[in-house]
Length: 80
Image 1 (cartoon, rainbow, N blue to C red):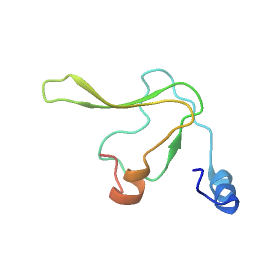
Image 2 (cartoon, rainbow, N blue to C red):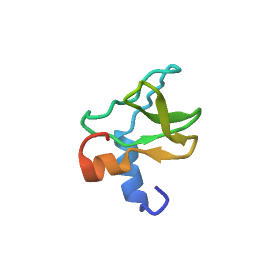
Image 3 (cartoon, rainbow, N blue to C red):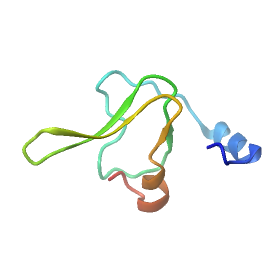
Image 4 (spheres, rainbow, N blue to C red):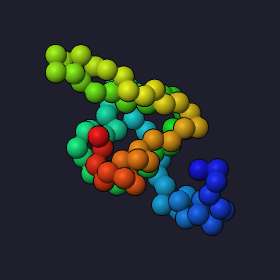
């Protein structure tokens, strides 16, 4: 978000809300509409897929100060 001007950051901040997840609680699932960007303040968000044999495959491990779901929101409209 660093390249954004102050006005754009203020607009984003005005619509932001804090979301606290319990461990193992899903933030979103594949195929759901992507209508929000997310930023990690503390802890870690792991994005994973489940393979056809039921094993979890970690796609990304996102920590504090990082954002996620940009491509889903701006390009696809759904979470992949």
